[in-house]
Amino acid sequence: MPERKPRKDAARNRQSVLAAADALFARCESPEGVTSAAIAAEAGVGKGTLFRAFGDRPGLLRALYEARLEPLREAVETGPPPLGPTTAPRRRVPALLDTLLCFKLDNRSLMLALEESGSSSPYQADHYERWHGLLDTLLGQIPGLTDSDFTAHALLAAIRADLVEQLAGHERVPRERMRAQLANFTASVLDSGPVQAPANDL
Image: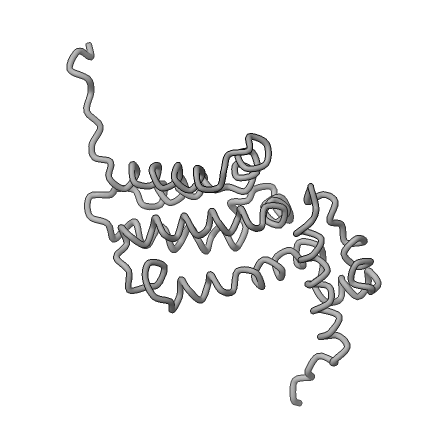
C-alpha cells in the first residue's frame, strides 16, 4: 500500500506554526513566554493542530531549530572553507565554534528553550551530540592534542546557551568582543602544550 502524503492543509498548518514560533522567539524577552498556546494563537490554529504536527513543545522547538540551522548544516557538510570538510581541522574548529556562537547570539531565546526542554541536561540533546561528535573527530586529527572527547566538551561549554545569554543579555558584552574572546580561548586550547611547574615550586 503506497504511503499517504500529508494533506495540503496539514502541511500548510505545519508551516504556519513554524512561522508563528519563529516570529514569537524573534521578539520575546524570555523563552518561557513562548508557550504552546501562544504559538497556536499566533498561527491561528488550535493547540491540537500543533500537537498533531510536532508531538509536543520540545518537538516543535527541535523542528524550528533544524529549519533555522539548515544553511549552517549545509555549509559544514558540503560547503567551502573555512566550515566545509576540506578545511584543515586546526582552522575548521575555530570557524565552527565562531559560527555556532553567532547562531546562538542570533537565536538566543530559541536556544535557551531548546537546551532547557525535554531533558534534565542539555548534554543529552541530539543537537549537542551532533556538534560534540564533529568536534571530537576534528580535534582527534590535530597532532599533539590529547583527549579530544573532553576538549570538545570544554569548547562547547564556552558557547552554552545560558552562558551566551548571561554575557550578551545580562552583562551586555558586545558581539564582536564575545567572538574575539572565544577565538582567543579556542586558540589557547588548540595551541596548549604540556603544563610545566614554576621553577620555584616546592
